[in-house]
Every structure is written in structure tokens, then in C-alpha cells.
Image (cartoon, rainbow, N blue to C red; front, side, top):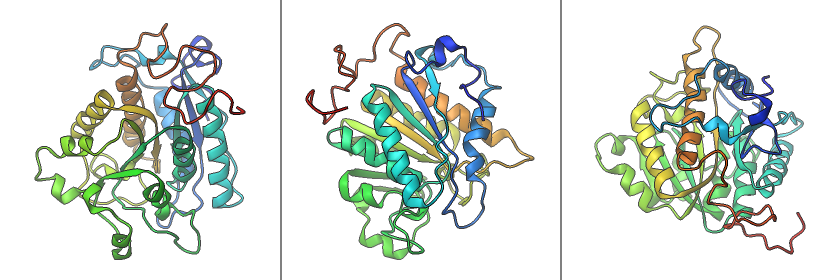
Length: 311
């Protein structure tokens, strides 16, 4: 697996100076159809090695903010152990004042990531972009299954779901349908993205399951579903979220790479880079992001931690 993002130099990839941390989690322990999401982080990073780093739309080179790729989380003894390891690792880097991103791997990983962000940021919205509702309290005997990825978030955060087009009837008992944007409605509603943004609190964590995208552009997922989002409507929506809200972090899940088609790997890498470009487009490489305090506490100004808390 690549040690750096897109082969950037030490000047931009050292943990000490990088504003952005990318945590790879090559785990695929609970998926129930096509296996291979454990190869997703490596495929995304390999594609990034072949990606040009000037973003035309934002006129930026966001890698100059610094992107540090951590060692991959290799815990795989049980789904719960993976979630706990992800939770601890993500929280550690948030406390170092980094913009933390996670690349999976299957979606159960997000349980630990969301838990870490929710413990750190006040009044958090989880913006869940996915084909599947993922609201089961447990599945196949586990609360840490990919089908349960946002159940905990539904109980502890302001959960807003976008692109949903596959679910079990039992999930209706958990789902807040006033905060769910079904794909079939989005197809005919011109201003759905405005309606989503109105439901978001100031602090937003985005969990992006790549099967939210239409299989015509993203066939490389474990559970593809017809009728998904296309590239430019997805970017338009994400740009709006980043412009109007404080996105505190994000993950990209469920890339299940194929040997004969590398275009989806590049899409995933470009999506990752686009999201960073939207986040930092108004921040020069030599200044602090305005989401953070100027002191040395290492705490985001929206954090729940006090200066007296043990880091």
C-alpha cells in the first residue's frame, strides 16, 4: 500500500505539518455479497499515484495543505474490535487538530469513525450518502455489521440520509423519513440539495458509501444498486455542503476494485481529492484553517473537550 498520497514529497506528507490525515482501513469482514472492499484503500491510493493534482474547478492544489497517510488499521479479529480500533485512532488524530479522513473497507468501519467525531464535536450532523439505509440495530447476530453502519448515528446524532434506494421494511421503525432523501424522489425534485442543506447543523461529518453512485459510473462496489447519483450532480451537492457548513471530516467506503476496470478506482481517488479541494479552497497552504483555534491546545473550537481534559 502506498505510504503517501499521490506520491507527494515529505514536505507535504509528514504528520507533524500535514493538516489532513488519511487513515486506510482495509477491512471486509461483514460484507454479504461481493467481497473485495479490503482492497479498496490500496486501489484508491494507487489510482491517486496517477492523478494530476491541480484542481481546475477550485484553482487549487490542496495537497499543499499536507496529506499524511497513516499506517493502515489491520485489526481484523472481530467486527467490534475493528470498530473500537478505528474509534481510538480517529479520535487520537482529531485531538491533534487534524482534518481526519478515513478510506475503507466496508461500511461497518464508519461506526467507530462517527462515534469519534460525535464525541468530539457539538451538535453533529452525520450526512449519510448511500444506496442503502444501513439502519438495522443488528444483522446476522452483530451490531457491527455493514448493514448497521448508521444505526448508532440515528440514535446519537442528527442523521440525514441521501440517495437511499434499498432497505428492509424493518428499518422504517428506526428511520426518520423527514430526514431521508430517497433516490426516486431526488430524480424528479430539482431542489433536493437545498432541502438537504436546510436540515444540517453547523458541524457535519460525511460518510460516503460509493454505491450511492450509479453503477454506470461506479460498478466497483460490493452491493451495486441501479438508479444512483451521477458525477456532476454529486459534486454540485458536495460543494454546496462544504460552502455552507463546517465539514469536520469524512469517510469514503465500499470501493471493491475490479482487475479489469480501473476507472472506478480513479473516480474514488478523484472524489476524495475533490472533497478536500472544496474544504480547503479558501485556505492558503501557510495559514491555519479557520475552524481551529490559534492556541496550542490542539483542539478544534467546535470541540466538546475543555482545556482541562487529558489528551
